Image (cartoon, rainbow, N blue to C red; front, side, top):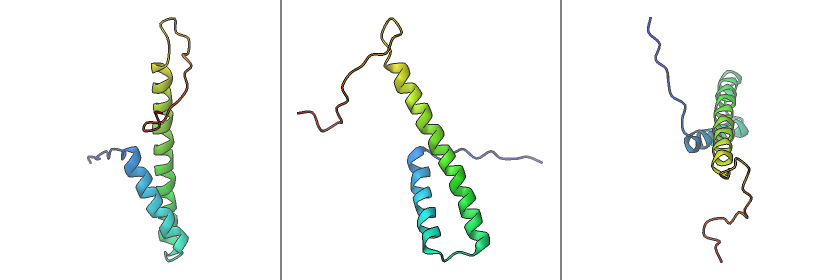
Length: 83
């Protein structure tokens, strides 16, 4: 029996799907069984998003190290806000 492994959706796709699930659950129009399935999917998507955010944070931390390995502190200026 072969099992196909599905890849996790990217952060933006997972977040958009999570928002749709929340909206469906909030409307209260789903059966209990379908609500549980949607909730379970939402939990998986949330974990996927948290993992992606942790990885991004680790990457930023690694890229923010100076030649001596110490952290480089600098003021954050959001793009488009460079006055």
